[in-house]
Length: 244
Image (cartoon, rainbow, N blue to C red):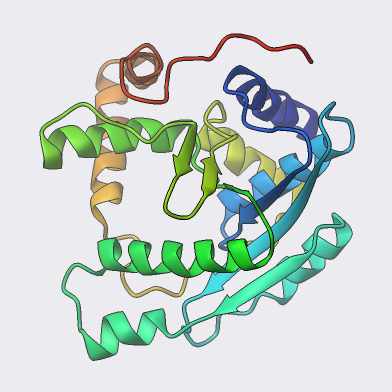
């Protein structure tokens, strides 16, 4: 996928769900993975011509795992003219050594988001962009059905009143296959996730299940996504169009 196509899909989500307002200062949550680096490229590109002025800052939470080197990510941020801020933490040690969590992902996510949101507010940002893509939407819906018993998915835009912070997800129309294509085409400096639980999560199970269903029923994944978009789940109703 080309940068132009990527920006077109991201711009569609931004416009349809009104994700960006004038003078926003948006933190891009960067993990070092292909999804967040793709989002960083898209937001930096759109910033050049979007009719509403906004600032970007890339923010990464370092969980404290040995060998997590962000040098290449810092270089990319410099090339894209996006300030880069690293939040150093002991989250990895706390979860895997002190608490020895058997199911670490949920607690890790809460601690990581807490550290990220605190840093974002200190940096003066009013919004944070997460790199959840189209496949993440479907997988989250499937996980909610399997493990919680109701039809739910995160929204394209969510206001966190306790933090006075708005979460936006500009990549909801981008498929993971397109992200992989973008990574290969532009040589993204992906940093391997050093987490011991990487690849052994409930999300991985939901992903495999969705892909199996889609193989046996071609187009099922697309229909799952359409079901979410057309649902009554909070945050998915498109607001009235506004002037450019």
